[in-house]
Length: 347
Ligand SMILES: NC(=O)c1ccc[n+]([C@@H]2O[C@H](COP(=O)([O-])OP(=O)(O)OC[C@H]3O[C@@H](n4cnc5c(N)ncnc54)[C@H](O)[C@@H]3O)[C@@H](O)[C@H]2O)c1
Image 1: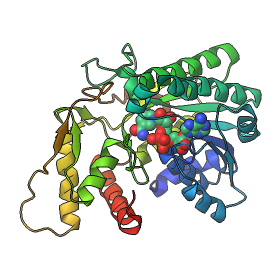
Image 2 (image 1 turned 180 degrees about the vertical axis):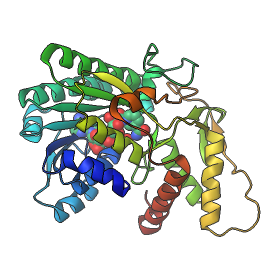
Image 3 (image 1 turned 45 degrees about the vertical axis):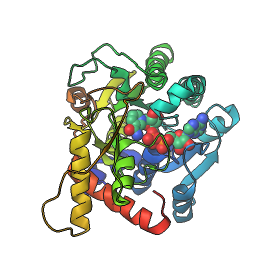
């Protein structure tokens, strides 16, 4: 994932030589953020306990730029590790979390302690080192099952899973620490982020990762529910762009909540078809492409029906508009899964 050259020119002055901390930087979105921060000239410290990631990608970056990437292997619940990671950082991008809705339903207390208590810990350390900005990876799951679309940040949140509740708590503490201690914070509500390096191997894999793996292995994608549920699938480049804009904004941010999506929604059956078409095109399959066979399974607890971001606030507050549309993002993502499965049998 690379940002367009003109975007890099625009962002570089804010990040060149800047010390930043990325919690959860060994993970999927965090890894892409670290890549881009490196390209922008920042010095980055990552803290990650590797509970849902490996050090592989980060180790490659450290090999390339040993003076500009530092890794603290540890939990955001461990004060010593967090103190070491945040020391000297001007900007903190807080992404460390347990990100799976079904896993949060299975293990609600563990989810709460990492996602909610862990966010308080990160804020306390950011406050101690007088960080200029904390950018929090919040979630569109906060909107819950209110059928109204698009989702506006002014709508009443309705968290339907322990995960959604814990991320909403994260937003609340971002606001509270801004109001109580003058820390500059912002929460970005991400809408279904996808892209290369998102894990497809877990039972909790995100839908695009799971569909990609199934389709590339010639298996039918599994759809939970009737497949008519829709999402604002957002390429990871857009999420990274929004985080960087939020991190550099010279507005006096104080806990604002901002949607980050694309403003377009696609249902799961349409998604499976779009992805099957890419597979067929790449395999040079002849003839019309039939809709892929999917396997239906019962709807999962905590899943919401429709999701679509209104982007007015994102545009007005941080100047965000999406850079990469779903089609382009899917092409790039499928190419990565194809290569990864060919190389290792894993994605
Ligand atoms: N992927 C999405 O669609 C999406 C949507 C909305 C919000 N988000 C949020 O974005 C952030 C990143 O998500 P992702 O998709 O990259 O997930 P991810 O699981 O790939 O990344 C999270 C990282 O946090 C690490 N981590 C977990 N617990 C930790 C702890 N106690 N201490 C230190 N590190 C810990 C994991 O090992 C992992 O590397 C998360 O906060 C998630 O809630 C993601």
